[in-house]
Structure formats: C-alpha cells, structure tokens
Image (cartoon, rainbow, N blue to C red; front, side, top):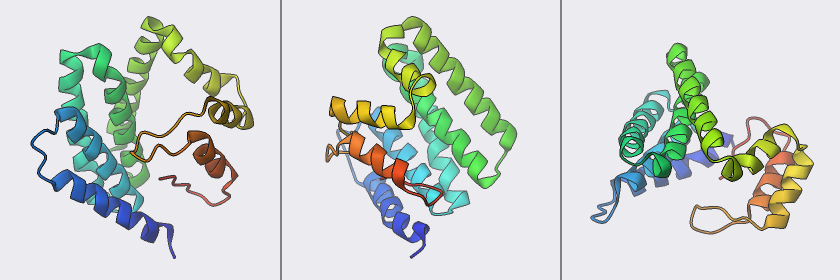
Length: 171
C-alpha cells in the first residue's frame, strides 16, 4: 500500500466535513476544516485540489486576525505556513511560498515579542532541546491532540520520531 492510499480516506473525510451543513459553524471552524482539507489533498498528490482550500483558509483567518489579532494571529500564521508547504511540495509559485513563510515568521516573531511566556516553551523545543528531550517533555506534560479523540501528543511525537520512512504523515 502506498502512503497516499492511506491518506485518501483522511482527505475524503476532510472534504465531507467541509460540505456538511453546519448552521452553527463559525468562520474559524470553516478555516480549520479548509486548512485540513488542503493539507490532506496535498498529501495524496492532488496538486490542483490542495491550494484553493488553504488559500481560502488564509483569507478567512486574515479577516479574523484583522478583527481580533490576539485570538487569530497564531491561526493565520499556521495557515500561511501550510500555504507555503503545499506550494513548495508541488512546485507551485515558489516565490509566493517564500512570501507566505516570511509573513508567518513575522507573525511568530511578533507573538514571541508580545507574549514571551506563551511561546518560551516553543522556542526552547526549537533551539535548546534534542528530539528525545522534546518528546519526553510532551509525554510528561500529558498534552493531548485537538482532533477530537484527545490522543496523547507524546505518543504521537514518539511514533513519528521513530518512523524511518519519509515523508512522514501523522494523523
């Protein structure tokens, strides 16, 4: 089985969730689902289907961040990063990928400057810890995923770290 064969059901589920009628769905929830759909589409090699949902997520999150920066700038940065990742993975308008990454980094720098306590752990993991230390920290903290099942993040990170195959996809 190809890894893309395993990702197709995740992409199909993302598309299904996006198309469900949700009268109480917020723009933030729609952006989350669009981002997820774009990433999953990219992972199955759907070059044409990957970028539009991520671009729409960026547009929604940009509007939300303009209205409430403290609440939505981190999400905007995440969508910009995903936008760049999809563009790079498929060789689509690479100059736009660089622009998206630069904007995401600028947002993260602003967040670190204004909220150093909130991002100090993130910076520590990136620049001071080994992969093993970061996984041990996640496991000890008993942090759980936000996907609905609350799967322990430390276990997920450890399985990703140990996996030899590339690219790696953790769902």
